[in-house]
Length: 84
Image (cartoon, rainbow, N blue to C red; front, side, top):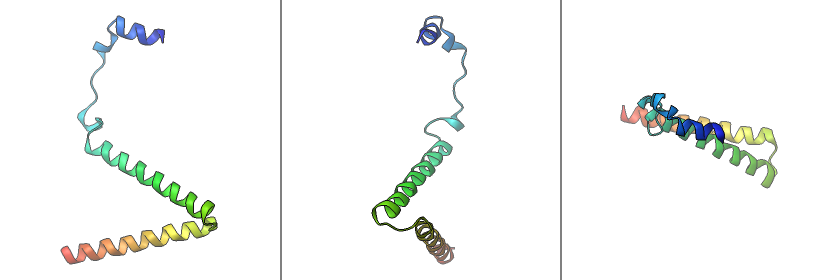
């Protein structure tokens, strides 16, 4: 707490360079990282739901997500082929 108060009162904040726009909270890079984090949390909750609530074994949950990944890849490939 004291270090923060000294940081403000001694105006040490003036000597710090601002964050690059590339790493700013609203940049494409950080927005993408946020989306990947949200996706990983959704997958984690989905895995927990499948294993804890539905009683599917862990390997079964992995199989479900693996098949979903393959299916999504096939759909995206088909859409890419049609549009491209």
